Image (spheres, rainbow, N blue to C red):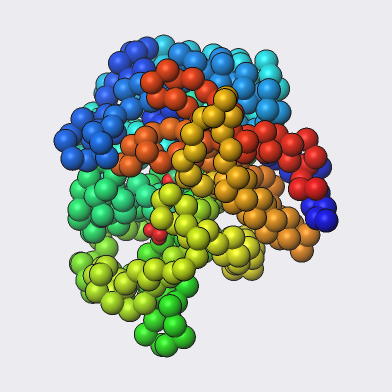
Length: 446
Ligand code: GBH
């Protein structure tokens, strides 16, 4: 019989992002985002799916917040759509601010604490037209946007995420090209990565300068890497992929320097990283008040040429997989937590996303998603172990509150603990939602 009680102060939550759930893309004065453009470019998103309607949260936010409350989930992480706030250059849209103000009203009415993400990938198209994240001039624009949010909501939102997953913005958006804006230029991707990190650091500084007392931090995505064999060449391959995925973000934020082995490799493969200017790394080294991170899976690699930027091959394992094809492997979350503590930071950690894509039908108003429950339970067990051993894990947010638009994969992948019928937009809490409600009530696994 397990009895895994979490600390009283532990924050249980669930997460979403604006573009993935809101819809209403032409409403409330919202402008176009790079993801609208990407969705409506043939061949970019599976099945030609787009997010014009998505979960219809723009109109159903009251119902959604009420459901979060009914499940007893005390923390809700959501993102603010930049194109609702600045639909066009220099144009501040009050209606956009009012929408999020109404969302906050509902959260307050139900005693749910917000955690707001300033940027979760939906860049205004007008900014992309000026070069987007590849152009360093985006940084003052980001700071202006962040400051508008702080002034509008800083007294109501006590926990901020600057940027969700710099690696994805940079590498999937500008290197691999599977995400908007769909560019495939590794040098550009590294410049983007740098500008995103800089925007993060300067935003934290701005928040503090303005005198706000809440918590602010970045959200990184980590994929722990394992070598397929013990050979030197495979271990080096794993080190490179770890550099590419993880250290490239952790090292500048916590140690004030990019990892030297990766700088040397990138400069050899590409060209000198001349977008790094004097003083940048001091500004990036601004972790803020916590480290948020998203964890889904590990990756096993060997030396090879499948991925020429870093000379690695991806290796299939026989671990059970989610519908994303990702290994279910909670032990690497445990090792990751430990590594963050030993090598990087004593700051509170938040798991700002963890969850699994599995598809189950609605049967008699129920959705029996046992494998999602098992996935979350297994990951919570290692969280508990880490806390027992003195680890500073402050909270856990299930991705996602409801099924939603899974970016380039469209609506096929269902991460929600609440099922969404995309024809009727009806919400049905899955077994996992009821189970998670029980976990929260018990403050742990019993
Ligand atoms: C998050 O991205 C996003 O924040 C969220 O919007 C999204 O819906 C959610 O996750 C689910 O995808 O190729 O096997 O090495 C997660 C993105 C997931 C990217 C893991 C890297 C590595 C898997 N990351 N992935 S592998």
